[in-house]
Length: 202
Image 1 (spheres, rainbow, N blue to C red):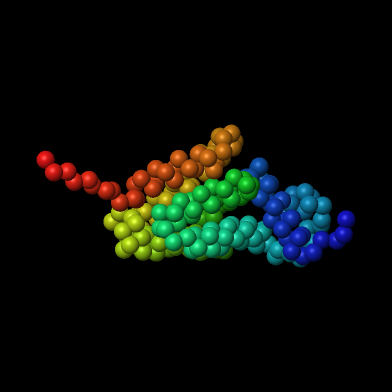
Image 2 (cartoon, rainbow, N blue to C red):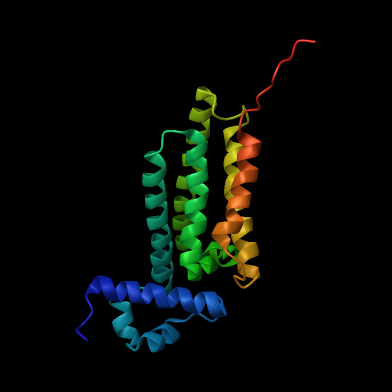
């Protein structure tokens, strides 16, 4: 097997770090354990990532790739209802296919203690939040959505994604997140779709 390129080695480090964190938690995650799992020395590890926090930021950047993909797909859709469906479903699909990333999604306590990592994560999360707000504002104007406050809808949608993933993770992934997620999507769409009143003459 040939020598890994820098990008390949960094991807391997991120993949292995996510597996360790997801299996054992942040407290058990050390660069010593990570280098041992990969089969390289700690100094070699630090040539790619300057610190443990830089590795965690690398994991968040992996999440950011998801965001860029979601935004590109959603932007290509004209119907606002379909935009919301796609926004949510792509999150579920990606997380189900990359389940080790779940640990970083629920690392609130750890993040609060690490300013550098928390700031980067908040920046990535804010992109999704403000994207949803703008989408809902435009959908209200076109009549695709009910006249709810966009900020509240953004919180509800992101909260629904988070809660659904947490429930799936707590079940040890015993069912399909994507299939169950469709039920969540259907419920959210019923909430935001404008109601049609049929008038009858009596």
